[in-house]
Length: 305
Image (cartoon, rainbow, N blue to C red; front, top):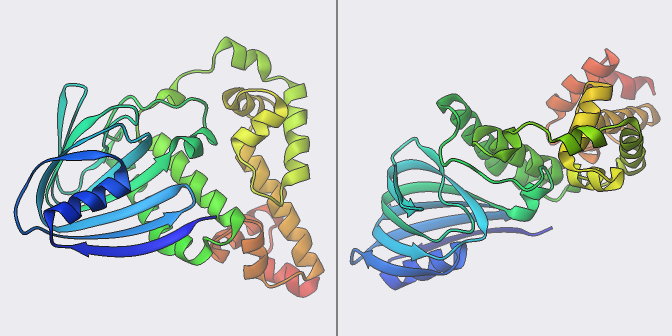
């Protein structure tokens, strides 16, 4: 799993252009002030990229399709995008999707404090089938705030400390993708198709449950489970909701919690070690989930094992 952190500071227009070109794809410089100053810090964790850009700069570029989803939060200054014949201005406090990954666009920044989160198509496909975003703004200011706080929590607290743990990394990635899908309008909000309803039968569910229980110790996604069940992700979700009143990933968490319970009873490490082994970055969250399931704190199970 790739983990990269770097900070670059530049004070030359060509250097700024080169830096943005390397981060976001091919772009052509249209205009910019002389003697700019920009600092860019980047953290790359697997298929997620976090960038922060700030400084004294005014820059306009034409950008080729980026083939990734780039979401942003403006802390200061102004950000401008034009694509599909629409002009969009983002001011301090705004959260946004910059442009569809297959679309070219014009972009401009003016003395920004700009944070971006880049997600690949492949990592989104692990959570939902064929997603297309249908808007550039979150569905409400409340969910925008939740989305941004989730990004900051994962970027600053979870991934720097647990990015080397495969299950924690996978859970963090899917939490970010799922929160993004809930925050921005997209095709996952549509109703299941007739084919999805037809495929959401008990045989599909049994194949999915067997796969989950056989592979709970490794990183598996909703897409992996759907492939094992030989149905779409939406049909898989409908099957779990219809027959078990839960979701595939919630069922997977329950299986992992049961495995953690057995580790606690056997004394296979500390509470923190066992929590991380089964995908929990925060022992407090593990303890809350464990107590809800077993009506006892994990530390007590460990001591009595």
